[in-house]
Length: 424
Ligand code: PSV
Ligand code: MN
Ligand code: MN
Image: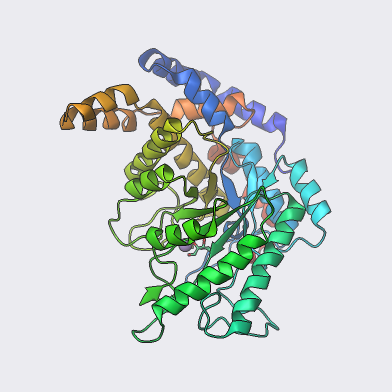
């Protein structure tokens, strides 16, 4: 492990006086802080194994040094993040980008870092070397039965890997769709996809969930066979109680009201989980909270309100995952920023005075309702988030410590200047 408890302790000691001032001020201003801290400590966000290397675009990729060269090194990177913030206690694998050779060993390695395996992700959007049938014209929707069967078998294989790792869910994202009018019979594509998902669903262990992730466009630009939450919900409802919709924040048409989608899916008991990221245009996969943190807060506000209304366990009843990666930042720094943004939005949502908001809504007091939400959003909750980290043994300033201790340089020294992590 690149960072030990002593390094974290001496970093915290240095930042403590400043932190204590900010925290004491907030405690004096804001009721309910202790409850928020307890919730923050429990809340864990899974890190995707494909976000640990520098992401590329279709125009190029500029790999950074010290990127993880295999699954073991990816687990070690997530272990480092988790040691720094104690909020990244899970890793999500994309198969076959990351296949555990020896599952028991991989599981044991993760446990050393106090990590568990979150959802496993299948990949039928690329052809793999030696693959018999191509996914060029789709996978589960394909007109050819043998291609569909190959995609079904792959998903079942991914479930098998997940079982060995102790994962409890499968995320299916399909690139299926069409690029031009007339290319596809929508009804048949839907039916084929449904039948494929039904076979995959039948292979799920009893305590597993399947998440059906939708996306409005890309790589297909005329239609996507799981194109929006309506389509995803149709599949999930037809599949059964273990099937849910997964919301990736970058997968909507511009200006979609994601918070309303979230509220309604929760109400239908069909919201399964999240892929957090941020975007300005499309599926930009930018750092969470970097473009529109207010939207992130509004989403968390719906989550907290909706989950509390149904007595749900915030930390465990939904799948929380980041799906962000891009071209210009150190991936580990980027992930630390993303987790911090999620914790901030969650803390702000926990501070919303729900009783007063309901009262304002009941009385059609629009201005007051807005004030209540914005009061929570405009509260600087960073000392609360830092206090939660402090109490769970993490660093007061994870990114600062990452830089001060030159952890990327140490990774470069260990792994080399020119390493390229597997993934997109
Ligand atoms: C597709 O854009 C997606 O959001 C899916 O979740 C994939 O699994 C992931 O990105 C691949 O990067
Ligand atoms: Mn995603
Ligand atoms: Mn995406």
